[in-house]
Image (cartoon, rainbow, N blue to C red):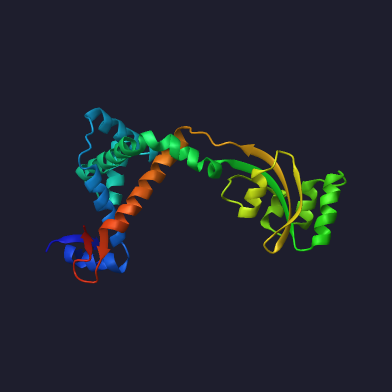
Amino acid sequence: MGIVLEIGNRVYTAEDLVPLLAEYQMLPKLAQEIIIEQAISEIECSEEEQTLAYNQFCQQNQISTEQAIQAWLAKQGLTQEQFKKIIIRRLKIDKYKEATWGNKVEQYFLQRKSQLDRVVYSLIRIDRAELAQELYFRIQEGESTFRELAMEYSQGSEAQTGGLIGPVEMNAPHPKIAQILATCKPGQLIPPTRVGEWIVIIRLENFLSAKLDPPTRQRMLDELFRQWLNSEIEQKVSFSPLQSPVQLT
């Protein structure tokens, strides 16, 4: 059996690679790619689409000359023909996503929007209720700024930014903090509240409503694709410790 891979003075045949794929837990990835290949097999791409995709890939990876392309191919261990197939495959995947879920993106976005909305907020967290109450009143009365007190008293990493956190998506903070922020108005100061082991003082600084712009639309397509792929893997793929470890039903 011919050599497939050579690393240093060690050579590997195709027969050597199957147990290695299992040992390094790469069989699920292989199964995933096979499922994708089956799904996109009927997708057609025009020459114009292929050329555009090729140029975009080179631009994104800063491959601007023929010499740079050849160097990149050598580094990746690819031939020009294999490179072209990779580009076409990526294009087919993008077209498959659009054809399958393009008309579902808006509805899915609306389902996800409350998690995609972003907030900027200020936070002080300490472990003493009496001190938290004192700091709250000092901010409320204008005796000290939130930033000053956060830098002096807050016991988390936010002290380094004067308590300021964000912008972050609404699913990033602790669920109780996220729930509080969802009901606040910008500038609103929240009295000391227990969250886990901490007493926190929170102020919402800004609320950034998520919009279905091109990057977000692509993210929604990618999420729908990933959900479908995970479901396919769960339903169709089984692994065995035998020499033929992957079975696609």
